[in-house]
Image (cartoon, rainbow, N blue to C red; front, side):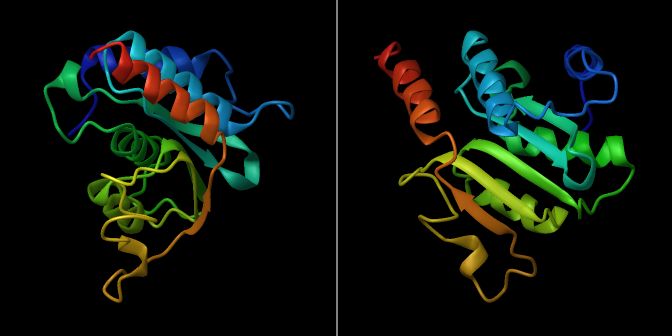
Length: 173
C-alpha cells in the first residue's frame, strides 16, 4: 500500500525541511519520533511516532506518526508507514544499515515487519504490556522461527512517550 496523495505531501514536506535529511548532532532521532507522535495526537490518532535512520550517514530516510483513523486502515501504524516509506526512498525492501526509533514498544504486526525489513536496531520508548510483542506478549524476536533479530534498546524517551499516551487517553475518557 503506497502513500495517499495527502500522506505523500506531508512526508515530502517534512523531509524537505532539511534537504539532505541529516540529523543535527544535538538532536536525538527519538526526539523526532516524539514530534511525530505529538503530531499524530493533534490529528486524533494514538500518539505513536517512528523515524528510520540510515546509521552510517545519520540521515533520516523516513518518518511517520500513526494514521489508522485517517486512512481507516488498522495496519497504518507509525512503524509500518515508516518502513514502507524507507523502502520506497531507498529502493529496496531490506533496510539493513538502518535503525528504527519508535515511541512505543511495537505490536506483533510491526515487530514482524521489522524482522522482514531486516532493520539493524530497534529503539523504543514506552513499553506496552497489553499490546507489545518485543518485551511483552509473544516476544516475537525471541521465537526460534524469527529469521532476523534487531538489536533492541528500550526505554529511550520513555517518560515523554508514556506521558503523551497517558494524556491522550485521559482526554478521551
